[in-house]
Image (cartoon, rainbow, N blue to C red; front, side, top):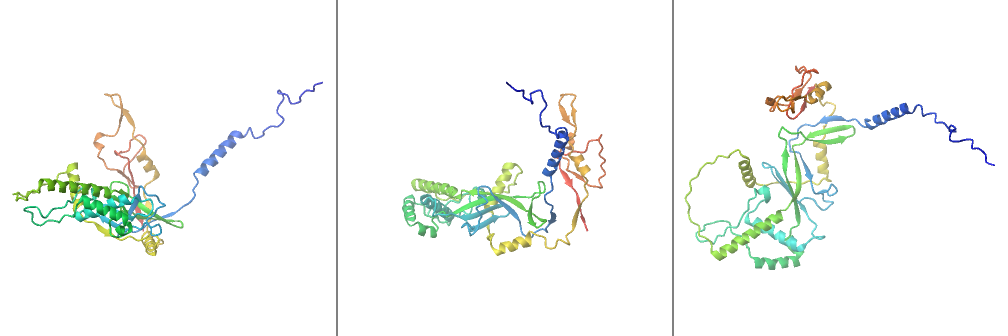
Length: 388
């Protein structure tokens, strides 16, 4: 005989969730608490601005070198030379290469000799830092030639013999400068021109943030000067072979009239002038201090922190939140009667208008019915006054 199941499908469940009626309000409260937790203030810092440094402060970003490869003596990559062309803004660093591991000695000798010989021609820089100029050897034995820079020996057969000898005696050749044993990183300084953003370097000390003005940013990339030197050496070889076959042309006096040429303001002319100035400017060598040295730590402490924060003047903002929101409000869109397309209400003659400066003493009355003055690139200049 079958017995009936006391909990049939029509019967109510044995257990009732008493919290089901209060579910929506509980979920809303939980969501509110979660949103507040996501936007919670985790730390507060007092911000200080350090005085302007007498020396230049640049931030150097190495685009193809990881942060786990610092230029330090401990990692065997302390730079051997740092040089700068301050007017044109070029910076280069020569870092040592590990020539005893994963290194092609044949190519190392070939490229090292190319660098050595082109420097013997008088080449001081390569690439854009040299204005893409090449120094070529001048033969002093030409008919009619008087003076000039003596050419470095350029003999392909002799070079091949020396090349094999340098590879065979690799350590000795490296000590004598016949091997490419450095890697060059270079870039151009992006300086603050008063139009773009102002960059600052921040350092932390407990609950304090100290900001120091940055004079420029440099994106350092690997430079292939050894390839430029190889191409330059090949051009010198072709020139020498041509002169040996056709004979050197005698130097003849030529009449010329010196004239003053005014530099134009077109982009090609400005670029040509910049390249000439870059080629003429000489390198200035800088000293490099290891970041793990006591001198580096002392300089870091003295220059990137404010000594006495108790007497530091305070900055008081005179810009209200309402003014900032009014300026950031997008302009309304009106319909053009001719084209039927939506057109900005900003007047065409305001294209060259200056950014708006908002302060508490501003005389501009902005209401909901009026549109605030706008600029082509919305910028808000927050005005602050020093509080004595």
